[in-house]
Image (tube, rainbow, N blue to C red; front, side, top):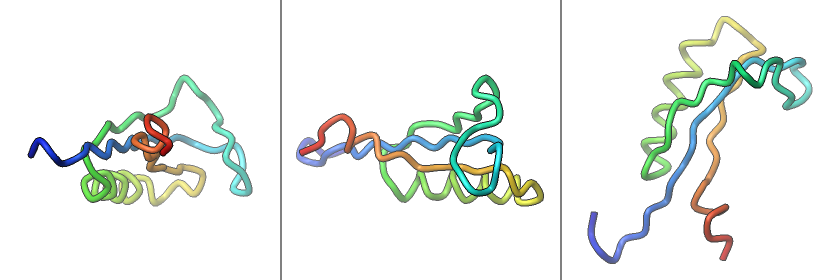
Amino acid sequence: MAEDSKQLLHLVFGGELTTLKGIQFKDLDDLDVVGIFPDYKSAEAAWRAKAQETVDNAHMRYFIVHLHRLLDPS
């Protein structure tokens, strides 16, 4: 990575929701942390792959968290 480029870290994780109308996980101990990625493009690819794997379970949801925004809100 070039010295002048910023890392834009993204977390991909998911799990089974209690209901389709909210974002409350059924079992926090069973969350699937897919990984931390250096940019949105690679995080999105991982998110799409996990979402496709679990397409038969409507209660499974995966999310992308913009860690770089949490680490440096400005």
